[in-house]
Image (cartoon, rainbow, N blue to C red):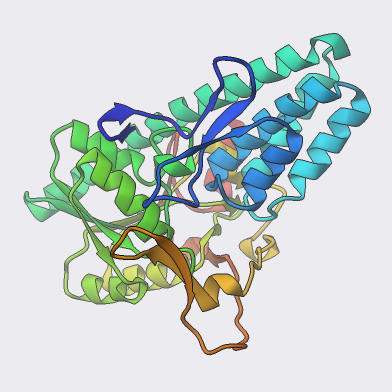
Length: 360
């Protein structure tokens, strides 16, 4: 997608072979910068400290992390160490374990001397597949936006999204935003309501940033305004992403998603989850089994932003020594999900439909 009018991706190999570049998402929207990951430790740090985030991008970054590790130690022990180190960085997004399993399975059957080059090629293949998956999600989601427009009888389709499931959460296109970008390309009018998404404000800092760069009309709202807008008839559909989807269709996404789904159901507004098949976890029968990451209290008690002079600062917004809880995700029950948009089509959120999807 676009930044300053130029096509960009979130992750790419250094042409000189020094490592893998990533966009540093902790500094957006105030500072646009890239970071070179040179080794396994750099890749693990990038995932753990959220320089990269979003389930699909975490998976691809982990794949490249394995490739970097193979340059230093291509032995079986080196492969196991890389998978363990990367696998411990973040617990909720299943794409991380999916990517590591795919890489280790592939490299286990590859001679040690060939592993560095083979690992880099496989990671690049997975990055390309992610782009293709997300573009396909966009095409299927576009049909839902067309249907919403027809139901309205014309005018902009008003879409609410939560957190950042945009191209910054993937290699390109995004999941929840892919249908929006496809609608824009098709000449359909859309307007996106962007939840700020406390406590890390990824809606305000990332989704609003990328929609603005792409020229998509949007409005930033506080997290608690979504239900009000739905009650007032100002939202036509909700599209969110997911970090893990259980076998019964329960969808785990950024904290606050569940409340949006409840409001949407109460107001009769379709609520869709957009995610690639790699985000499904058939080993978990229901969403309550999904591990929920608990992050640092400081993300709740403090907030960062830019001063009028452009200096990026971090300030405390709660009384000193106030304790805080910071669960990073919640689970939306399948009964509240109108459908799941995947690269293979739109599926009902139930065990039978998802079982058939995984067999396809």
